[in-house]
Image (tube, rainbow, N blue to C red):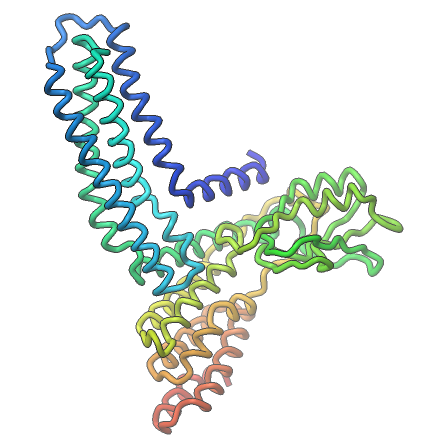
Amino acid sequence: MPDALASWLRRRLLDLRQRLWAKPLAACVLSVMGVGLAWMLDAEWLMKDPPEVSADSIESLLSIMASSMLVIAIFAAGAMVSAYASASNNSSPRSFPLVLADDSSQNAYSIFVGAFIFGVVGLVAVENSSFDTVGRFVLFIETALVFALVILTFVRWVDRIARLGRQGNTNQRAEEAVTAAIRRYRRAPLRGGVPATGLPPDALAVEADEVGFVCAIDMQALQQCAADHHLQLEVAALPGAFMVPGRPLLRVAGAGQGLPGNVAASLRGAFRIAQSREFDGDPRFGLVVLSEIAGRALSPAVNDPGTAIDVTGRLVRIFVRWLQTAPEVDAPDFPLVQVPELALSDLVEDAFTAIVRDGAGSLEVSCRLMKALQTLASLGNEELAAAARAKAREALALAELRMELPAHLERLRSLASFAD
C-alpha cells in the first residue's frame, strides 16, 4: 500500500475514533441487520422440527431490553462527558483527543445504543407477526447473545470508566501517543526522502497561503511533481510547524526564473494545514502536551508535584525508546525530496522547559529533574547529552533564583555537577 494512502487511511480512522457518533451508528446498523437476518432465515432456512419459542416470551425480553438500554446509554453518555471534562480540567486541554478516542468507552456506549435499537426493531417486528417458528427461534438466540454481550460489556466498562479521565490514565495515554509517533518517525526519519544537504542559493521558496499547523506531508505528491517538472525539493516545514502566509513550506531548485502557478499550487497542496496540531505524525506535540500536564500540576492552584515527577519519568522513558528504535535503512522512495531531521535539542526543549520553569522552587521536582537529565546525558548520544546538560544548567540557574534554603541549593548543585 502506498505511504500516502496508508497515511490517509490512518488519518481517517483516527478522525472516526474521535467522533462519538461513528461507532453507535455502526452498532445501530448491525442491530437492524440482526433482525433482518432472523426474517431472512425464517423464509429461507427450512429447519426440521425447530424449537418452539412463544412470541410472548420474546416480546418480554425485547421490552426489557428496549426500556433498560436507553437508560443505560444515557447514563454511559453522562459518565463519559464527566470523564472528558475531568481530563480537560485536570491535565491539559490538548490531551482531550486522547481521552475522547478511548475505544473501551466508545464500544460500550455503542453496544448499549445498538441493543436499544435491536430491542425496539425486534419488538415491532414480533408484535406485527413478522416471524414464524424459525424466525422466532433465531430472534430468541440473537436476543440472548445481545443480553450476554451487554452484561459483559457493562461489567468491563464500569472498571474502565472509573479510570477514564483520571490524571494517571491521561498521562499514560499521552505517553502511548508520543511513543507511537516516535516509533513511526524513527523508522523513517526522512519520510522516504533523502537527507537535507541544502539547495543552491537561487532556489525558490513555495510559501504557505493559510494560517495553521502543518499536520501531514504527501511525499508521494512531492516526488511526482518534482519528477514531472525536473525539480529538486527541500522541505522547510515539518509537521508541527506553525505557518502563516509568506512562510516557506519548501524550497525548489531547477525552476529557472519561476514556478508556474499550477506547479506551485500542486506543491503547496501536498502539505495539509489544520487549525491544531495532531499526535499522529508530530512527535514533538506529544512531548509538549506531557510538559503542559506537568506545568499545570505545578501551578499554585493545583500544587501536585507528584504528577510532575511522574511525567518526568515518562519523558525519560520516551527518550530511551527514541534511541532504542533504529531507523530502517532502505533506498529512498522519494529521492528528489530532501527532508531535515528533528533535532534532539528541540525535543529536550519541548519536553522539559515547563518543568524547569515551574518546578524551580520545588526541591523534590528539581532533584528528580536533575536525575532525569543526568540519565539522558549518560545514554551515549552526544547530541542528547549536550542538550540535557544545557537544560540542567538552565534548571540550576532558575533554582538559584527561587530557592531560599542554602542546604537545598547545595544538594541541587551536587546533582547538577554532571553538567559542568
